[in-house]
Amino acid sequence: MKLDLINRNLYTDSGNFIKKLHCPLKVSYTQLEQVSGDKMNCRECRKDILETANLEDRDLLEIVKNDPDKCISIDLNQSNLIII
Picture: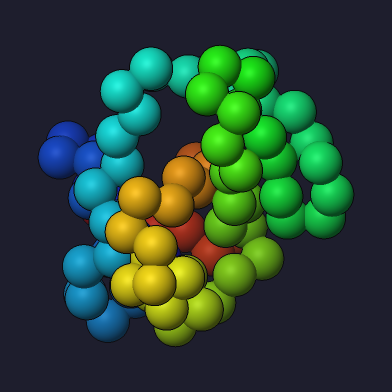
């Protein structure tokens, strides 16, 4: 995955657009609670949050295609992320 920090767009390694990162509540990582494995929950809106650290680009792209409003969590230090 590639993340453009200026416009907050997330792309696959090959440059395909995945999602614009935006939280209308401006929730921080500390406001999330771990549920299980790669799933977290937002304490503010109660939505499920998907951690992306162990996902392949194609898997995340498919998840977002099926649910464009899916909330995701990205750690800027995760090994599958390139900052552009």
